[in-house]
Image (cartoon, rainbow, N blue to C red):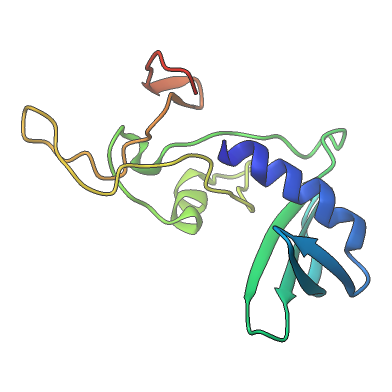
Length: 147
């Protein structure tokens, strides 16, 4: 699942924040460079790593570290447009949800979404989470599946 992969990459990448090194991913060797590492909010950093090699294969990894013991930090799940279907940039969601005393300053896409199709009633499925989705205590989609 994407959340597990994201967590695993975060945990692994955190070990190499300050140094270039060589990693093997899927049998391919990459040089890994830290492009940036900055504090973005209370107890929160963001980091970007660049994986590249001589055969021009490359990708970037972005992740945040969050100190959940910091009293000024809390996590909230939100849904795009506060509806089941719909698309919205993470930065736009952060602006829309922020209010005095509660700034949203980091965000991560957390699910897979339908990119086409419509319901039997003719409404668009674009942006609808594939799996169960709950945001700020609201159930947007609940399905019983093996995922």
